[in-house]
Length: 95
Image 1 (cartoon, one colour):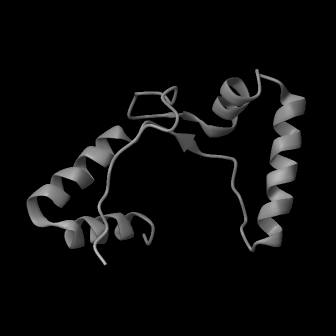
Image 2: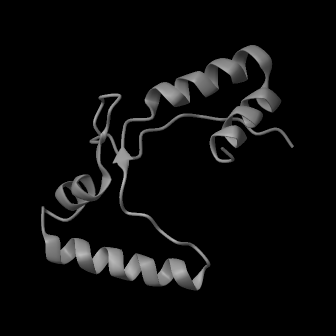
């Protein structure tokens, strides 16, 4: 089966800078109106759901715009085919 990558912007408010922004603070500000109470409820709920599914969510770190990464994947897909693009995407999640 060939996988065809198409880029999309699911959260256009993600910072365009390469450095990104603190993930916890970004979610709190953009998704929960800067409410610490709502953010705590979200992280508690998602942690519980994740634990049940064997996922250990990490709400720390950076969040950044991935449009350039999507462009890179598309470039390789168009130039070298979907198999190469699939290898590139797989490598992003297996480092």
